[in-house]
Image 1 (cartoon, rainbow, N blue to C red):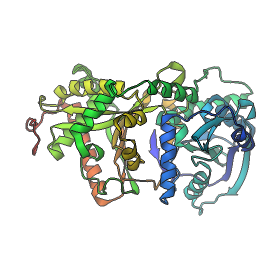
Image 2: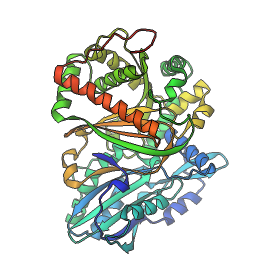
Image 3: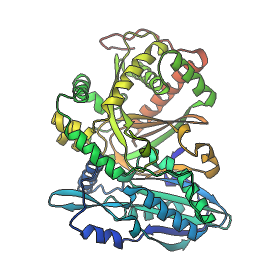
Image 4: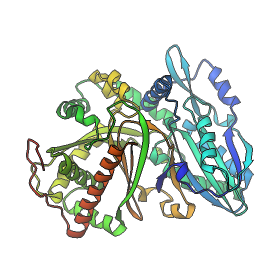
Length: 481
């Protein structure tokens, strides 16, 4: 599934209609004095960041979403029921936030209070800026403190309907929006047939997860292994851990408009060949990807240790696998190249570091910052503290085979701002694809393109020959490659 901005989406003209939940139940719930709970750690940090950036004049809604197509004319009644049922299923979508003297609180509307209203906006023609119209409406509706902070836009035609669902990042991560496409297809088909889709199992509550995560994190002390790993990572890497290995252009904290790069790294047979090499080397595919990134980083920088941060999922129970929410932790990865002659020998090194990272990421990064006394410094670096490399094998997500048929896309806002380079790598049925977000400067564009080209070269070589041998063994002290 492609990660796309609305400006990259081809949308045929049609009737633009907006679908939202009735705000009255949210307003009523906000006035109640009881029942409110703290937001999750991710939500808390996100909301503080949104508020601080708005105070600096950077009022850019950080929403995330998904788009897809429905065949034939839209059944408005079935679509309304689809949205209602989806929100009832996922508790976070019935939640909103309020600011009190004690801080930010989360409150929730009961399932019985969920009702949907729709508004016909305009008949769009071929001459209209359709992506711009869609983004303007989503920006206005999907703010962090809106109630609710999600919206659905449809562009309806006689033979098809384009659907765009967007929500503030507080309520979803990348996996959530990918999994939601098939769920919407199932719910809509069932609503049109007058029944309920039997294949959809109950899902867990992100709100309950956030409370349990917070309680567990408060029991974590400064002597916890995860805190020690972060402390050593930061001490060894210094300021370099806050910057992309190649020159990203702006100084840390300078918020520039983002640019975007999309490249195909491998086709499906190539990805299978690399996976086989990784397994033979006693590692997984993600470990192989990080090993290749370490090789490329060393090629450009001469550094003998590759350090980066990786997102790790925190969906620790089966009922959370299909739950909407921000189930993501962050963890440090360190890959030393000094004892390896090539890719095959580096894979198990990366694999061990990644296994450690998966355990480390269970402790929320906010709690890590608190225990290290770095909360104020890290908040100053937001919206992204670290550049990261994210990997998802999308083949395991329900409905992935049908994404091309549905024209499914992950949606992100265009013209966000930041100072970091973030990389998402998705392995799908069609192969391996990289999407990077970077500051929109010539320096950053060249650096990210060079890194992606190097990554593709290494992986292609591994797929073709079964290994990638270093031109010279990396030293243990750095220097030129």
